[in-house]
Image (cartoon, rainbow, N blue to C red):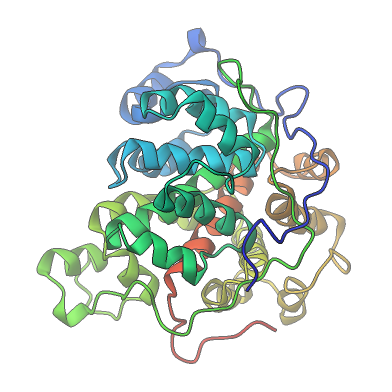
Length: 392
């Protein structure tokens, strides 16, 4: 496999922020009693900027998304410096004024200098980084290009990081990507002026595939050998059922597991999208990320949601031919988020014609949430369940 970023073709980049926000934040001075309660319960380290106040139009989404966002920002095992290096590099790769602005002051607090921020914005391959920090930045690059961390970079990180830190590092990039894509698409305006950043990020024209792992890097918990606490976390009802490998892998890190599971359950059971639309987005982004596990898990779910066998095959081929105009917009939305880290004006207009504000937010969080899962499943080497369905 070629090294990430150095071998990619970088093309002209334009700003991703819309001229006017597509979804305006609730004014800080006009919060309802319910919204103030959500601020008290969920703002935490995330803060109450334009990003949070935009999400407030969808209270259930706030409850589903913010616990994991706050875990990544303040409760993970990473040092503040390492966390901010990964987030700033992701902001550069996704060309996100919003994400860069939100984290430039946090980076200063984490002892990341102005000169270092300039190097992060212009490219991670320059001089001046330690061996380990260069590997961290390279991991962000590889996750953006391949939805995967290469063996060389993983080995470099594993020289200093244990299992929990390795998991947190990958999830930090994946979570930051979801948020950047969401607020890029919404045109959310930064709360503070952006400095040292001019939407300079890599965009790729090459085939963005990785070589799937044949053995796990993160071994899943064995249910029979797990502690009572882990078994209860995995199987709250005490049903005794076999737990899928994805959950047993994430259970290696219980502090991460709980808030991540809130996000997962929100997307799958509480979001406002129909099951059919949800599974279209999940299957399409899973295919774009080349996540065999996601495809295997959600192809049957797609059929149960009303997708035909032909439609499922269509989700695993380039383009949007053969779909109705409404469905084609859904397919394009997932493609554009993967390719450009934002949704184009034309596709947004088509989505806006069929979805309300809460559903539009759920389109972004569903696609971003499963891009996140695809990145980590690929990188951790989570093996597909026995007799799973493969890509068409």
